[in-house]
Image (tube, rainbow over the protein chains, first blue to last red):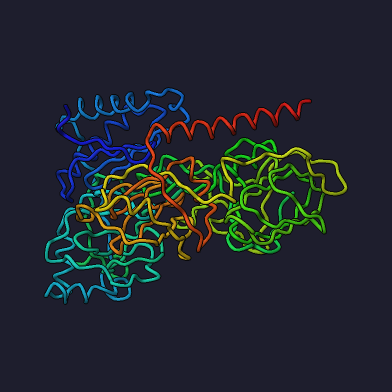
Length: 231
Length: 319
């Protein structure tokens, strides 16, 4: 019997592999490891492999499978065989590290002062702590290429705006509760915006189109308005 | 060789069978909401069932074709005219060059489809021509159609007719889609259980005015979970029935976001998505419990019906 994850249906053509129910880097790493193994052995009927913080969804192509009434059992057996058998924990390659330049505060980060007040810190100390961490990309979601980053310093945890902004600029770096993230595209959003990066998070002309992949590591570096690193 | 948009309608977009395989990047599915009606429209004009076509919402556009075209209109009961001639739904129609197609309001249902033989020339993005309104991806510049837009038509049949020619035979959508019947939508269980599951199936759920391609906002009874849980984002899918803290469920449709933090209290089965797509604000929907086996058999029979229609259409063309 499987003990590493629970398998539950997610509608008629998808399954959810549950590795836990909390946001922590270790559980999240297991999700990404499993996603990698499934991807490596991916059959044509497996159309989506969607990691989240502590769960992993897989969606199948019913038009390839549904002619066989036992398809659910076969797919479950395949998932268990691959996800269970090959998760060793030792085989994963080192994570890709992205260093992203960020202009903090001012017009780029209209909520920096509010986050500082909430934390009882000066704005410089907020920037220092935000740049000191190594963040794990927990998942991409909400919008194309939007990374949910795990590893925010506890003192910087700040609630979302009660009423979301109708326009958050592309590249905005925000804090939403215990997570930090980056808006790939201008649009509505409720996170506390502390800075902005020039990095293009999502570009359909690029392969892959998303700059970051779930499981990657992100480090922020403070730059001045001309893009020069701050001391 | 194009289709010019003279009036855009309320929300007219190019859609196909959707963008698959990119949810891990936060890219949703998009695509037609009523896949049954869209497939029938495509099949009637001789396209493959998942080809790009126009999805019209509640009130349709006015469009002019520069060349003769073979079209079909399916889905919601939409007013459609070419000159003084009323155009019927669920039939193949040939139009002469420079015909203006004037759509009005949907009398019943919410979404109608216009398929054109050969289809529209839209550069697919991430494998699909579907408009993703949130991400700003194609169809046409990632947005709804606007007056003055011109969409190039792909090569297709250019029928030789001086005025509209309406096929005698029609595709009867019933029982797969019957807008005269109350909307009964079958639900699979979700991972979160309700304190009183009977309420979900006993209540009549009213479609809220804030509903859109992303989801139907429902009201009718206040639902509570048996075991409230901390919200952490997990994958969601089109069809997922979410329960936000205010107790009013949201049924996700094709433009569903990839992840959501709300508890999942059910999943609408695929065979019933076409009916969901046709619900108008203020209308009611009823949920009926269902098993995975029933869901599979209903989906298979809907697909088989479409396959039979495709065979019948191609045989009639050869005769």
